[in-house]
Every structure is written in structure tokens, then in C-alpha cells.
Picture 1 (cartoon, rainbow, N blue to C red):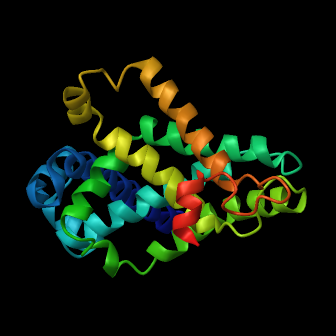
Picture 2 (picture 1 turned 180 degrees about the vertical axis):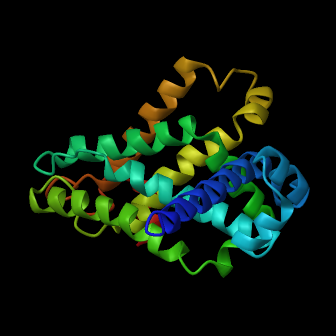
Length: 232
């Protein structure tokens, strides 16, 4: 009996912590950090306020844990991607499709990051784990870009970090602003055909950016003459 008790307690503690984390994710996603209350979270988790303080130390500690969990789930999902490195063009398309699809399937990812950006990243800056979550995502792109450069289809001077930011920004901005942009542009940007069109646009933009220029053209070969002249 004594050998099983610690295991049972540990499982119960983990279940309580996970329940609080899931509830906090929903509450913070709906109300933001400022609007999400500890009492709301404990009620949603069918727990007690004191358990939140026990496991996370404070409301801020819980919010940081929620943000860390967001990035961790993203990395875990990305790790399930099966990429054929021998076909870097298709592999890059697959990475773009994954990121675009993940944002759509996990809307709390965007709403919670929006909330944190309203606070100028004050909470995630205190995370001791935030940086480690960016490395795997960028490493995947780095491998694909390096393979493409080795095969002569991608430029060798494009940083994986920059390509990641390009994909993330084009997907994130569109989805986080699709309702206001729909009203502004007078077209339903959340419609399935509109979402599919924008995914294609992202793919095309990224491919044009990383594609190796034809021999003799160099980096500025695809620019109009007026733009090339202004850069010289």
C-alpha cells in the first residue's frame, strides 16, 4: 500500500494542475490576462483558489505557465510532421501548411498572444523556458532551407529565423484581424475559399523569397529596374 500511495498522489496532483491549466487557458483566452480572475479559473477547473497559488504561485505565474504550454503544444504538434528532406520545396510547403492550419485549429494561440502583446510581453519575458521553445521550430526550417540550398533550389543566404517570422506574421496577422479586415475590405476573409487563397499566397510569397535566382541575376534580379537602381 505504501509504495502505491505516492504514485496515486502524484497522479492526482498532476491531474489537478492540468485541469487548472486547461481552465486558465480558456478563461485567459476569453477575458485576457487583466480580465481573467483566479476565482473564475478555479470554478472552471472545479478546484480552489488556494490550489492555483500552491501550484503556480500567483495569477501571473499561472499565466506564464499557460503561455509556456501554448508553445510546448505547438512544438509537440510540429514534431509529428513527417518531412521528406530530399524534397525541400514540398517540405517547406508542408511546414507552411502546418503553421497555417495550427493557427486555425487553435484560436486560443492567437488570442492569448494578442493579450500578452497588449502587456508588451511583460509576463513571457519572465519565463525561463520561452527561448527553448523557439529553437525546435526554427531548426526544422533551417534543415529544410539548408537542404534546398545544397540542391541548388534555395538561396543560401536566407536565415531560417527570417523565414519563420515571414510565415508566422502573414498567418498570424490575417487570422487575428480577419473580422475587422472583413468589414474594412467588404469581403468575408474567414470564408473557406478566402482562407485557402491566403494559404496559397503565403506559400507563393515564401517560395519567391527563398528561391535561388537564375544564374547571372543575383539577389536583385527579380526586382523592377527602378527598385534595383535605388538599391545601388
